[in-house]
Image 1 (cartoon, rainbow, N blue to C red):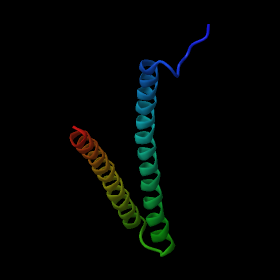
Image 2 (image 1 turned 180 degrees about the horizontal axis):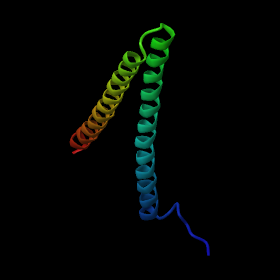
Image 3 (image 1 turned 90 degrees about the vertical axis):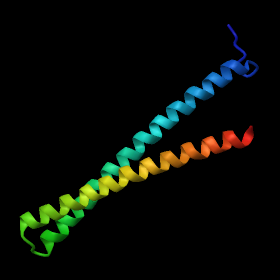
Image 4 (image 1 turned 30 degrees about the vertical axis):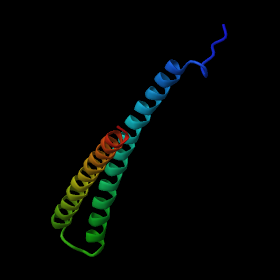
Length: 98
């Protein structure tokens, strides 16, 4: 059975839509993964630096936790703002093409 995928625009559009949805989903997951990795690295660096400088353990742990929480919150904010800008740009392009 031979299928002619190139000449059928409906099938081609459906495939492109599925690929775009999958790519968008994977992009969001990678952003979250990178943000979580960044959060742990920043918190760990603050804790390691505090311990190397000889600061009290509880103080260092508290500072590392605060830095990690701030890093996580800023990462979530950045992901949200970039998503909102993407949606706004997409709507503007649709409005402009009308």
